[in-house]
Image (cartoon, one colour):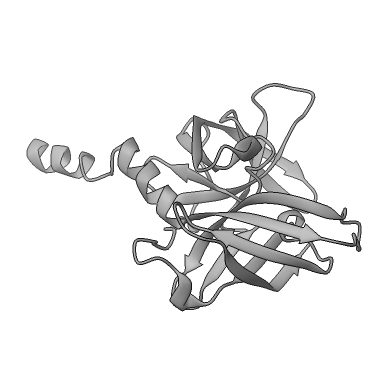
Length: 201
């Protein structure tokens, strides 16, 4: 019995593998909006997204990253060229958007994110926030789930993993390598208070 338990405990990937996987499904998103509409601001911006359906070429991100304004949108995988993306769904109410790219342009080494949609995040569990903070591409920070916070219309995962501008739309990943949330915001007047939309939402 002890041997079986030790074998099960070692089945989870190590942190290095978790982050290597994250680099394979995370993308950088660049948006250029010449005119800001629908409360969006014009100009260029960037954020993060992650691949959820390799066959369809679907990438999930925040609505405030994708915007609803007339714009050109490109995504890039680690070490890859920019790929033209189009918006197929934008929901500003819950700040979620789906982008689509031509599936044939997805690098062979890319993989779909494994998402844990079954349970709420457990307070105290270790997590990584992954993305491109301040233009530092494919960068991770580590922390814990600090709790759940209610911001209408969603309960959000609160974390002390560093989240900065450029992390929006990126994955919040547990130590089992599963995405449990999508990074969405940071409390600018405080330290170590970031938020992610739970994937079960």
